[in-house]
Length: 237
Figure 1 (cartoon, one colour):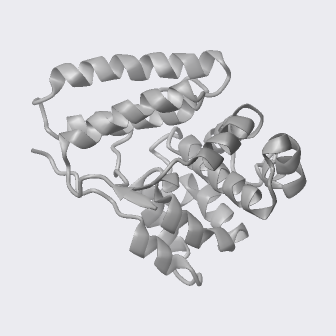
Figure 2 (cartoon, rainbow, N blue to C red):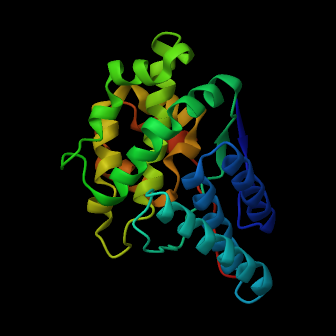
């Protein structure tokens, strides 16, 4: 099942994102908390000077969250606030996903996000090593319940890769910046359909969606991304 946010640039999207950021912080998903703050900021910014006070308050939260991530070694400390392309189709966070997320957050998801921010797919400590089935089984412990658990875990890893990529310098060429996302989908082609249909928000940003469609246009399941991952039209007001 999926829910859909407002189709256009609507201030209620920002309010929803800020509320979601608090929920993810409570779950210990600090990088997703920061990302939702950044998305909300982009929406307020699109209204020019109409929401200056809200923007200033949110910018303080963003800076505090960056500082928190840096202190914990989860980011390199360089604040990046790119213009965002908001994904408006979202999946539901069910009990099974939460259980797996909590198991993987510290040992897997945080590390993958940091590696994606700092390195490429095949350099130094491999992101792939965290994605191997045996490693995921070990980290999941009693939360592991067969093949579906591994599938959910890898989809959460894809989200963490994308969260890390959104913290990379915006001066990079898009294809280079999102190379890890493209490599993941090439490696795990069977996840393109469930990602797109059940958790389109794991693509994190419309710029990642567009790049993946462009680079993977010959892949069998690419139509699922086009059909299910919807991006809001954000225009200056």
